[in-house]
Length: 324
Ligand code: FUB
Image 1: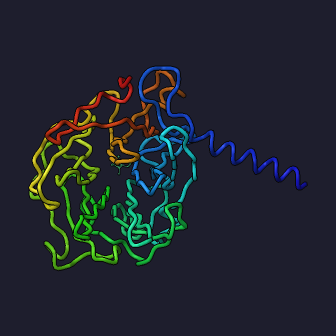
Image 2: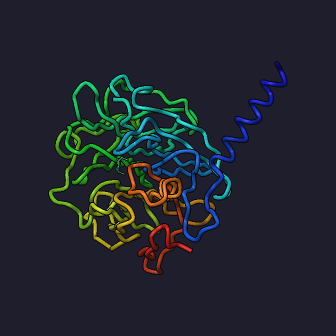
Image 3: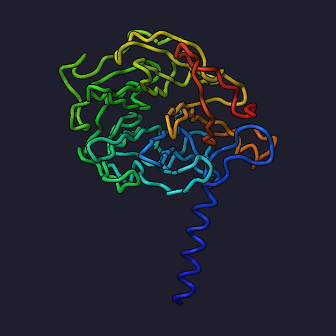
């Protein structure tokens, strides 16, 4: 019995390592970095020598969005990935969260805690996408809901949260489809400053050029960057720059152009071990498993290195499958 349990445990651990290990296959082009599930909406987080990537999961029988939970993967070398499985889910972690609606998320570390900002529906209110927050002591969880209610809910495109903590300690929350919303997080990271904007929220009066959804904000050499899924559909990855976390945001072009081989995309951008990486998604795993079939929402997270020009603008990337 003891031997059997040991054998099963070794097999499970091996499966977890192998499941996350396939970042390329023998064809050219960037392959899905995770091959144990269909994954979307990547959100990388560098912690010391480890890069964590949170993703949504598309169910194996998904046609449209059927997303049971948020998965986690980690790596130390960008080659070998450890699959941690589902670390949170709308119906498992929020009393109000609707099953199979685990849309985009981002986790940030602060003051020794990890705050996980997520999108899912509030099942009490019909189709009302809302932003919730979970907290944990470690990137892997376990995550708990510290407020018992959505953090953001005005039922107007409240999806795709991204959080950026500036050098002065102010944490900014951005989200929205099709308009960009901005809020200031309080120091507790689980409430917003209600004195900002209209009861805590500023909504852009018009779309940023090429903006659709999925904002992702970072700072480099004193310049603020906002990447986003660019106008639907198909979505590429566009970006704007600013001298302030509040904008105005100046459109700079594509990080990755729109491509008919996809309908969506979703950037997650991170510096790790001295390089910059752009994560997003395509449909490679689905097409490999179902050659010739029209794609369904069973997506594949992938990444590639991203570089800058001397003036701080970003060198455009080829579409995932065309990257050598
Ligand atoms: O994955 C569900 C939704 O699709 C995300 O929230 C959007 O960014 C798009 O990727």
